[in-house]
Image 1 (spheres, rainbow, N blue to C red):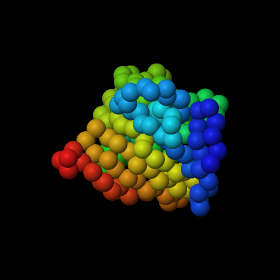
Image 2 (cartoon, helix red, strand yellow):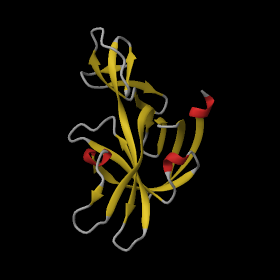
Image 3 (cartoon, one colour):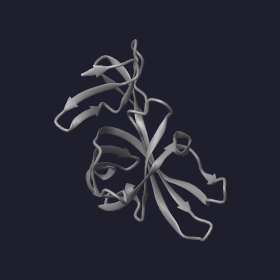
Length: 174
């Protein structure tokens, strides 16, 4: 395990994996939504969001944004353009986009440069994540469900990814 003031990393079979939390020492602080206790630390979970992006032409797609555990220079988000809503718990495909600025986790409205309009339709917390150059394995707590995703790059040149989604738990299970 490698720890820094803000990150905890574990060496696994496929490379480094991340605990999905930014750690801050807790001195008896109470548990709050979006946080978790982990080895004596108070942890803030990384976030994710799904935006409905409507283009000026009227066409739309979903942008799936995932807080990146290893963004060392500027806080950036892993980003995919998807035809289906990734938060829906179904298998889907997506096109890997350039990393987005973290402001888009909370942003709704018109995008500069006549690039359309975005509306946040889902948000959640990343419970676990393991990322490789051609794979992504993560579990996300959405508002109504806990979903595990396994993603793999389908085409090296075009950045097409396939994701298998497995619903682990829904609010109906409680």
